[in-house]
Length: 503
Image 1 (cartoon, rainbow, N blue to C red):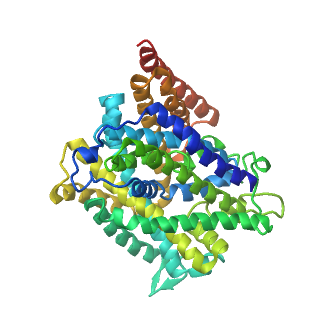
Image 2: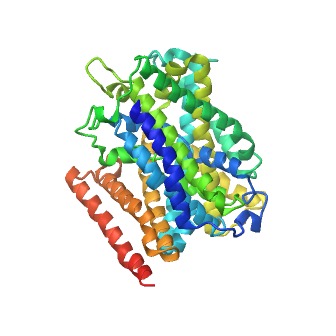
Image 3: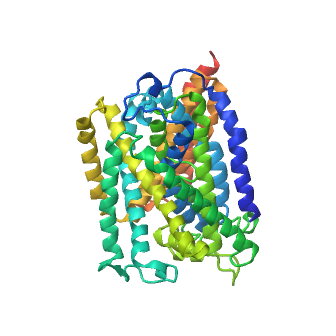
C-alpha cells in the first residue's frame, strides 16, 4: 500500500515541480493561437482549458493505461517505477512538447512537426507510420470496449465466477455475436465523431464519460486500499517484489517487454497524434501545461491504480506473493477488468466503473480516426471545412478499420504497442532538436535523454519480439538496442547539440 500511495504522491509532485520546470524551459508566451487566428468551426474551435483537459485525457486514456497496466503488472510491482518515472520524465514531456510545437506550427499534425525538425525523409516515414498506427488504435479501441460490453450484456456475474466465455446469451445472441454487433454500432459512432465539428459530439459527451472515468479510478483505487487494510486482498510492496515476478520469467524478460506492454500508462506515441487536436483549440499557450502535461499525469495515476488493483486482486498469498492468477486470466482484457470491477465494487458500482473503462477506449478510438483524417488532410493539403472532403478521407479510413477488426485482437495489440513506442521515440527526438536549436543547447537533453532510452526499448523489442520475426538471441538484441541508442544520441550530439552550443 505504501508503494502505491507513494507513487500517487510522486506523480502529483511531478506535475507541480517537473511540469513547472518543463514549462519554464519551453517558454510559453502570449502569441495568438491557431484557433484564434483562423477558427473554422470544425477543427479549429476555441475550447476552455477545463474542457480541453477533459477531452485530452479521454483522448489519450484508452485501453493502454488499463489493459496495458494490468498486463505489465504480471512482472510485479516494479511496474510502478516505470509508470511513475516514465510518466513524469518521458510521457508528460512528450505530450507537452508535441502539443506546444503543434500550437506554434498552426496546429500541425505530428508527422508535419517531425518534418520541420527532423527533415523531409522522416516526415514521409511519419506520415505513413502515424496513419497506420491511428487506424490500428481505432480498431483496438473499437473491438476492446465491444467485447467488454458484450460480456456485461450476456454473462453478468458469470465472468466473475469463472463462467465459460461465450456460453451465456442475450436475446439469442452469444457473447461473440454481441461483440460483432457492438463493433458495428461503435463504428457508426466513430463515423459521426470523425466527421462532425469537434464541439458538436466530442465536446458534448466527454463530460459525462469523464465522470464515469473519475468514479472508476476513485472506486477501484479506494477499494484496493481498503481490502489491503482489512487483509482481504493484500497489495505487494515494491521491496517485496523487486524482481521478475512473471511466472514465465525465463521467456519474458522485463527489458524490453514490460516497457512495451505498459505503453499509454508511461509514454505513448499515440498521444503525439492526439495533442495537435487540442493544440488547434486552446486559446493560450499558457494552458499547455495543464492540458498536455497534466492529462498525461492523470493517465499515469489511472495506470498506477489498475496495476495495483490487478496485482492485489489476483495475488495468491498461500505460497507467497504471486502474479500467476493475473497471468492465468490473460492480464489486461475485458474479462479481467470485469472481474476486478465486480469483485471490488459489486454489481451497481461495477457498472459505473466498467462504463468508465468503456468510455476510455471509445473516446480514444473516435479521435484516433479523426486524427488520421487530419493527418491525411495535412499530408495532401485537403481543406476540411466542407463535408465532402471530410467524407473523402473518413470513409476509406473507417472501412479499413472495420476490415482489420476481424484479425486476432492480441496480434493487433502487439503491433500497436511496438509502433506506439517507436512513434514516441521519434516525436521526442523532434522535441529535442527544437529545444536545442531554439531554446538552448543544453535544454534539448530534457527530451534527448528519454528519446535515447525509448530508442533502446523500441529497437531491442524489434529484435526480440516474435511478431517482428527477427527473434534474435536475447543478449544480441540487448546489444543491438544499446548500440543503436548510442548511435542516435551521437548523431544528435554532433549534428544538433554541438552546433547549437557554438552559437
